[in-house]
Length: 463
Ligand code: NAD
Ligand code: UGA
Image (cartoon, rainbow, N blue to C red):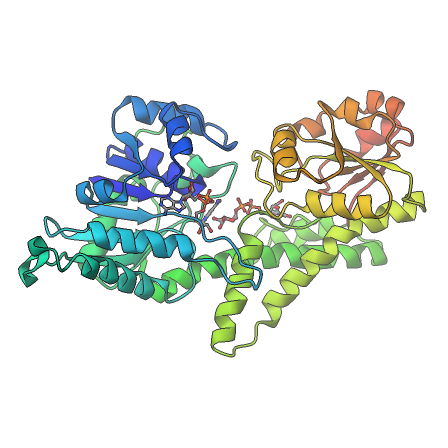
């Protein structure tokens, strides 16, 4: 099939590479020409395991190409994905300006040579499908005066559907090939069928998996869920909100565990074994961050406000998460008493492992808070040091090249991101070079017994 994907960020790039791998002809479009030039050489502007190699492979088959022209890409394609950013605005609403620009440009480029499906993959509020349709029509009308489009028979035919994306950063390619479900929101049978054909190899798991991402043994087919537009749009927000709610629930319980002398890891395991609850997303710690949970919950709250509908659970989910970021600082105060003049080392900066994404990363607000309290803050992240320096030039942090350099002279270290390498750290050496060998494990991820055996004063969360 001929596909174009507008927006070559996390979602757009991964979607483009996967669809090309499945044999489709894909044009990935982006407005950032410098980014496009790098991508043509297989250089990905962010850290995502395997993506650079995968991209290079897709480019070499000739099925994946790059362009800065929406006009040309749309004309060649039957399916047009919108995968541009929808970042949060200060009032919590998502900024839909990228979607608006792209939708109008698509309309401007449409012709009547084929019936097309425009697919909204960006995360957008309920009702955006209808809004995008209106914008596309405006784009179409803007060229209606051109003689070639003057007759009604020449009017382009298209429909807009919603196809929310559920991939996680750090495992984006695997999540795209082996998703829990594919959701398509449309009442247009043609669009539903076309999308089903596009996704057929994934739905039936009939493709030969890439060598480096083998198919999990228990996956034989993927549920294909067709809904109306509004339901698909709401499914995306509701899924993220529910995942964040689960984590906040575990975090609220973790505070209670500390008071009552229980262990949140046992409590999470004990409730997670109940299949109705499920074991995932119950890891307590410093809470969730990233580009989407906070943004999407706030956007959902704003949608509800339009209907004057109360969202107490969503607001509590955010409040518990905010509180959780200060829990590690409180623990530091409990142990060190005075923070002023202390040196604190942050193990990890990215909002989770296997990514260099720092959007809404707890590390940043924790570093800011510690600096404000008079501490010297050092940090080491296996991939995000440079990104952090570039994005936060005013953040007064000393960046270290490894965990031993980080530990030197520290009065305490805070584990912020559960990178695999921290689990295998040389605690003996770390305890030797720290001023005071206190480690607060903000993700309950370290082997406590090993750390203690090597002289670390270990503190976890909720235990
Ligand atoms: P991103 O910021 O990484 O990428 C967006 C891309 O769109 C950028 O490369 C930008 O240059 C390009 N762009 C902006 N305006 C353009 C225009 N007019 N024409 C062409 N290109 C343009 O964003 P992302 O993380 O890929 O997220 C995209 C959407 O998907 C968002 O709505 C997000 O909420 C959603 N989403 C993201 C993830 C994730 O893990 N990042 C997962 C699921 C859903
Ligand atoms: C999340 C969703 O999992 C994806 O399905 C969705 O597509 C994506 O948001 C999106 O819409 O952008 P992502 O943000 O990449 O994906 O990362 P997650 O693995 O969900 O982790 C989010 C945050 O929750 C991280 O800060 C992580 O450390 C934290 N977390 C996760 C916990 O604190 N505890 C847990 O048990 C699990």
